[in-house]
Image (cartoon, rainbow over all chains, first blue to last red; front, side):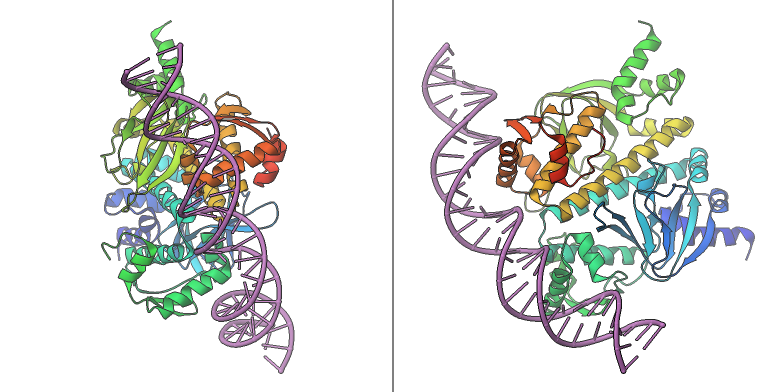
Length: 241
Length: 241
DNA sequence: CGGATGGTTGATAGTCATCAAGATGGGTGG
DNA sequence: CCACCCATCTTGATGACTATCAACCATCCG
């Protein structure tokens, strides 16, 4: 394997998929991006990438495993802000402050790529496509947060859980994994916390959906048996798969 | 007034305050930014800037007045996604798609500056500080959306309204307006929709807070009488003013 | 094996949505 | 300039959804 090919592969595994850059950079440009990336940082379950208040230095691309980001309020309560699957980018909420407003930890044994922000920024000034993509990634995050806000503000427990599962499904599919049979990397508590529901409610909704033959749930493993029905209870757009 | 001075003034009124760029561009750079901006587009109440699905061409900086952004779902329900006050930037959620996922309309007679996106993007490749600021603005939006998610998921009606008022207060202060006495540019319906509450609840909470001498409410005019108490019921950080 | 963590299930109560009706107020036309 | 009207806002009564409390079960790991 030539050096260039090696670069491309690692770049695709790390930054490229993370940054969602499909084919818009030349080999040479990918080379430059890739050179800045520190590869394959492994973490155990519960291992933390950074903590609330830490100085912001890098973005992190999930390579394998899964992460959650969360903050702790004055009264010691945890608030789960998001989950990150392979190919997704962690730390975008820290750029404007210089410090991380949220902590991030591994939900299972995971690996990361570190992308030093200074260097990414400098590089994005030189490579127009990279800048362009960063804008898109940031904008996309904003849009997804808006969707989540709608979910949290206006939907019932069933709709929240349904939409949440469909969202995970979509994200797994995007990474060429099964969208109907997957593992929930996070605890029920985390799901409830994220969706603004009590753990008990999460549990109840999941069993109810199982009884209705919409899902098959076994611990952390979920199989979506009836996508159409799930879309229906979630009040989501049922088109596409 | 020299041409350069004129540029600076309009730039400050429009893009600079909107982009939150305090003193980081040279006069010459501001000149370039400013040249791209189409100035002072006036809109009547309910006048729309763009509609859901429209092609994305420009960002818009609020110059005066106020706007809401919202989407309409399949069943015709409106979902208010955000409010925009003078100095804030509308349309960041559209960058990644090429079309606007939300509509935006004026809540009162307002004026805007249009910032053609293509040109902003090109320019930000040349002016490092502009790129840097765009990243910060986008990141900041992400962070604020996260805060809102916590609000929507975990707070009671009183906390939601309290935090909402404090948020508005802070934003008015940032623009050097009073943070204790201001006008709510949006209808109660919009507030409720935005916070995931029924209009009736918004109304009730406001009158209750008035009875407790935390607020003075007269139609759309609000005066915060007891900031400390308001922070307390909102379960917000009560430091700073 | 035993404690601990995480998950499920049941009973009760609280918050807020919903329905209904009245009050206010700004804008328009006579 | 006033009166009317429609939209917006307020207030009250009832009920639904889901949080909370409590107990039990499963699973993991030392």
